[in-house]
Length: 279
Image (cartoon, rainbow, N blue to C red; front, side, top):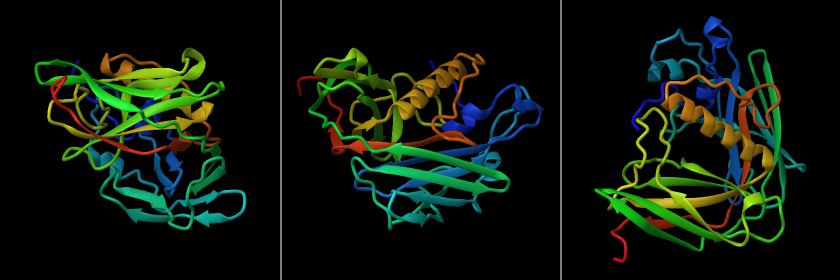
């Protein structure tokens, strides 16, 4: 399977609809906060495309919300985030602040004001669950499939997603394909199949993990709203890959915008070198 995503931000992909081809636009917000780390928020306006027209990087750059007012509150203090250029991401502009750091169990409220738009969302950072092991399951030619292992706690209501970053290829973490996991179907020890990293504005190669790759992998716990968003995102990716149109709700937990504001619980990032099995 090799198709191309014509929208850079996963949120812009979600916002591009038949209705929008007629000129509608929406505020698009992509944001997250992890325990032990600072918030990262990206703001833009969605882009309406005529049928058959391709998306180019300049189209995205022209729609960045650089002058947005973005704030995050932890219930005790409210911090206005600073907009800065950051080449690790595309578009290369984020809102963040070193004065607020994620903590497990805390609730964080995001507010975004831009032009006539106003958006708000609340998220909580759940207890992290550690990765116990990563191993290569199989190799076909030069590509590999991996297994990530962890133990789901006995209490219900745990939701997971895997993110990966490959050295010399990625400057930040990307979602790993089809790794949205609810403990409604889990019972203790669990193995998750990893075979593809979803890099936006790039070809969709499945699988795209190769022998020799040095990968950083993290297992994120999240609340139900964030989990639902990522499930809907997978539907949008699949419909794009097969040249289908499928309209779904991509508003996540945001009121007044499309996108999401997610609290992630991360135990630790795991470094893994992909080798032949049993090496």
